[in-house]
Image (cartoon, rainbow, N blue to C red):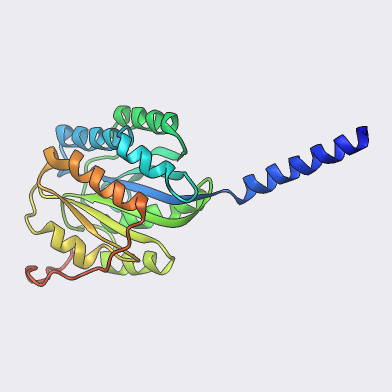
Length: 241
């Protein structure tokens, strides 16, 4: 009888280990926050507050737990020039309200990590893509969520970097904060986003960031794949700096 109980225990243990090893996330998400010179202190605070508010929102929590695997992993980076990208919040797996609230609290308190400098969206994309190598779990989808209020003006050509990232199976979405560049959402749509279901969300200004970020995050968690349509009303293409 004792040997039977031991065998049963070992069998259950092996099943538990196998389940843990096969655990996957619905989404591995990198939130890449613009901390370049064009973002002042109050604008940075509105970004951080918007991220915190989204992850403590019941609608977002519901979307996470209703996913096929019931969990996502999130990393937050701050970026400015091509040589400045910093991890602000390391990979965090969110499976329940407690996880989400703890993440939200960290987002609300996170200090600005980068030096003031130019806007290197290409550098942010490169750093974000490499960050997936350290994700705690494999995921059905990998998404880079680029937040920006200006065009790429430092580092590599952004279209080249975008194409390289997309070839690795990552989707790039963007949140355009209309702060100084009125056509930024067109620019990000044409030059930055890519991959299955890629889209641009638009915030009218930093005061609109909280609403826009939540809307964008929900769409990313739910994996709503939509066909990318080029807006024919866009202004003529501009060259990156």
